[in-house]
Image (tube, rainbow, N blue to C red; front, side):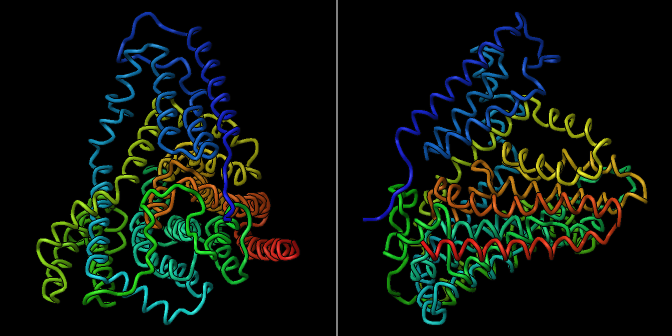
Length: 557
């Protein structure tokens, strides 16, 4: 009998904790409730306070303990709206649904968000098409004949994730679509596949100069600072400890053939034939191990994927002005990733349709049937994303960003040597709580630029910006409400909470090593400037030693 995870008594405790937190909140609100509301000057009683972080914390804790994502996110949203409304039922409903800055309806009306949802549906349709013609099964069978081991399959997944460095959303869904048939045949759990996808999404994009993430970082540098944002981004790459240790950790886990924490249970069950471990099946029992049927061939998967990669890059540089005279790098820096991915996706579907029609492997009726099928496959991530965006909007309405900004800005001057480590921890917590790396960049990078504004302090500026990027990716990687984490679950067809709970021990291991590394890097950077780059090899060595010790202890049990 397979091992299971989770327990009912813990759920009751979790809901009791939430009830107590809400009771405290009600008391605070009743002490500060206003009789009249002026829309122009209105602020909630808990604005820019520690209470502003309560909604995401409640949602995250509930999701991890109860294993129920939708109800947890909804309770988080409801808590945020309640806090914002100061206890007013009418304002609570309006803020939760119709507030222009955080309401669910306005989040769904945002062009960027809608673009991401449309791209999700496009990817779902593409996957449905590749499955319909037998391309996914053919590639899975071909890969199973050429990739002979579980180690080789995991390494192939990691390498593919590294190669698709343009955008994290695109990375998650493409790697999942391509490698899921292969990992299924090698009895690799869906949770492990989701981890490999997630760990090659944001951690790769944040050290790739040509990516939507590089553009986000560059645009976060204040215009009047006199700092070349792109050059600074390049200088941060050797100091991005979390990204580098996470990438190394994937190879170590695969090569040394060991896992720990909840992932160990999932992998042991997968080797017995159960890829899911828990009863949760958001995508059904879709184990892709069937033999190839019909006329499907490997090219029926490879060609559409290559077309999708090419035209997604084309769409991004197009929106950035590449065809209006901008350089390729500048076009990426100015790109609208959401619009570019939708453009690339639509072109790819059209080309894929004609390719399959010429090949004679699909009829127009079958093509039309794949459209609603692809949409249905993406309902789960669309729901989670929508609620995650709304929860993030509620957190913004409560002034969580202002609170974090003030905390960091007020303490920065007195603790410059420790600032990289402090920024790493603050960025990780903020990204974990809000589910957004890019929002974390926008809050913390201007603060760091103002603290280290002189030429002499440039080494500390680079180290601190790297700590900000590293912490943001770390928090994003751990957070159940992060869009990248949600996309990784969707790409792997894994239960979302299973993915989060199995990934956390690995992410925390890399985070602890990175945090200690930034403590050392801050001291080195303050006293010895750019020689602090030596900290990256030291962090890598520390990770290898810790991993080997853990592997021996697990093997000895």
